[in-house]
Image (cartoon, rainbow, N blue to C red):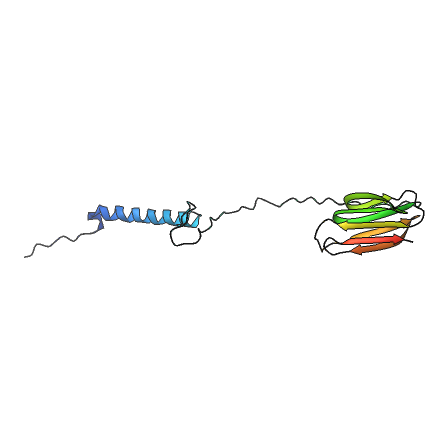
Length: 167
């Protein structure tokens, strides 16, 4: 009669169970570090020999709500029924001169502006230039006399210039 060997099962080897649990925990930790942004790359900022750059660090962004944007609207100007005026309209900055009979005023501004022309006898002139390279918006200049637009010109080019005279 043979004495039977006792068959070994996992309960007889506790070290196998412990090693399996440690292995599962290690895999979970490595996966968490990798997928949550830790990665396996060098984060010291120095490149390894033979490489030309360091992989960029990933930053996760959170959406915390809707962004608030305030748009300041320049009110349109109201041209009086009497007198002579130069109206300049441009979204960005502009510089220029305006006046009558060679007596010119220098201005620098932005938006929709109305300038009074003093002693408006003879030739009214206005010359304005965009202060930027935008090609998206027109620089417009109008000469108004007694509530009516008598001369108008515009320019959309980068650093565009508008030069008008009346009459």
